Length: 487
Image 1 (cartoon, rainbow, N blue to C red):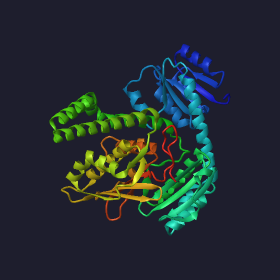
Image 2 (image 1 turned 90 degrees about the horizontal axis):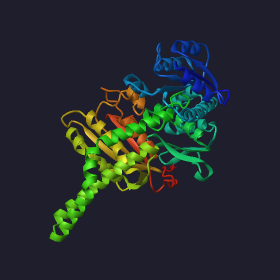
Image 3 (image 1 turned 45 degrees about the vertical axis):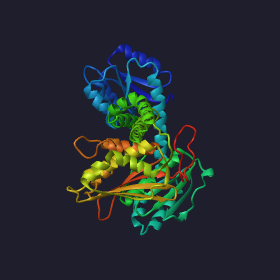
Image 4 (image 1 turned 135 degrees about the vertical axis):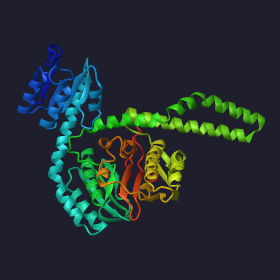
């Protein structure tokens, strides 16, 4: 890594010297003793990494790293500090925030540099491959010229064929292959069926050699969905963009813990402490008195405790590992679980109707899938016209390898500028309807092999869809518990 250039900015001679000694054997290191000196260097030269102390007498580390963000090309930025004040805390929560390393740093800087520089290298390689293989402007023009879903599928298959690492791709309209061929999972490192249009049933079945080919293909899928007015949580950005996905994922894991557990911690503490003893006592008492009503109550307490515990464990796993353990479950169970939590609120604002085959078996992390549906149902209730003048429809349907739950309301729909970013963490804004709920739900769905998408329902309002792999067609989960990729 001797071609990697690093700028170290710190007013403390000892700290600056220690970093020079540690990093110089592997990297080309330049140092600056103050913010003003760093500004001059950053304006004149390009660096791969900028490491800055937070507290300095002239310009602090946030100013230095913000200057680097504006004047450097995709530089890794690291804030070195032993104390984070309110301003720094707020800055570190932004989507494009620098990394933070505490003092003393031990080997944390070395580990962080190795990881982030490798991610940067991969990102640059993907950007080059994308530029060489796919002209997105030209693709958008081609997609706009399609006169039918079949033509759209043909265009997508032809463009997918030039993506490096893409092995097979087929377009499926209403369960019929109209272009290309459905990939053989045994011949590909990954296979997946991507829903393009949730309303009219256009899918792309694809398989490739590596994760880079999958990510490039998902960019193509996103452009096709956007052409049809569908916003999806599957992939909403170009992988060539400088946003650091791993850091956003870490923020989302933390947000998932906060948003998920804050609402149940009170109940969890009370239930888990006394549930086993209470349930056993009630069951024993019911058996001795032959009281069927009491026995039913004991069963209800036990079931409630088990449900809360399951959700707690799933949220904790998502926080710690960024993944979710999936199992076979009836889709009706997921819908019922969500309605137990929020059905009353929906019925207070609108007429609620549930339709479709509730017995379809899906592969999912049931508590997380239910919470994603809760977030969608709450949005539908809030968007509904007042005084029960609207209707909220929960529709269950299936197609090939996936099951879909649609929630349709009679509200005004999502504004276009909000719809484009509502599944991304940088869309979080206080005082608006674009809070963290949908971003967290989208992240939890991706962790179990599913997606959330949005489109306008003709003659109605918003239509949000949850898509999950069907259990009867899903690949078995690998030993680490990650969800398999359905075809």
